Length: 286
Image 1 (tube, rainbow, N blue to C red):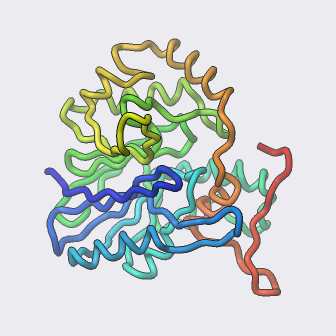
Image 2 (cartoon, rainbow, N blue to C red; image 1 turned 180 degrees about the vertical axis):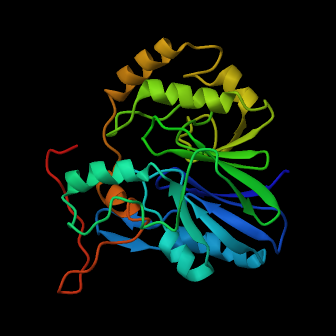
Image 3 (cartoon, one colour; image 1 turned 60 degrees about the vertical axis):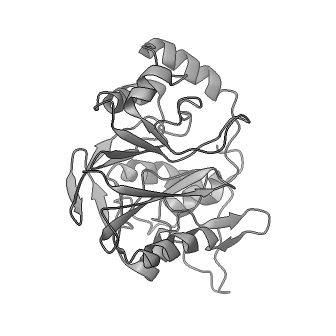
């Protein structure tokens, strides 16, 4: 099966959102949606999500799944807004519970915040199969960037989240709480063991000045050309490179609002008695 994949690139966060479907008028899945957020004004908007909604309505698609590859640290999810407008079930990997446990402590979240993933409509386990209309799909657990990363295999297309980037960009960092470079290398090997012509769709692109943003690659291209793991690079070589590189990286601009929202399946905390919703800034914690 060869699903149709429509990408949407958010230039502010370098994020790709995807709509995957079989044909016009069919069911679809939305992968890794974006809620626009201005950190200077602490204001949200739905411009990016609106483009996805317009496309889905134009193609007469029905939303069955709103998939998150992980709890993103660089953008807020628009999943609740998309669900209100289009329907569908919000889903993520079952190890989101681990991430919730870590960040509930860091952000000192309200006592009633549950650590069981119940904020999501469905938690996928590794290897779990599901359908998007006529399309067969499955979930593949690929931790390392975070403890909860899940790739989604839909026909011959795999949505890899932050596990892999384009070959000339490499791989994602592993220094967030619960991340691990050795684990990421082994997760990547699961992806590289797929047939060479498998289509891989990345969650982000940070292109060099010599090219425009791209979103699709292949297993074979990653095996041969990925600057971090391609051409037979060993696990120890990768771990040494990844740990040294991560030590030089600053935190993502939106990590503080994004994590608090995304571990809630994109929902905001309850408003205070004055009607305003607040997020927390933990000093010297990350």
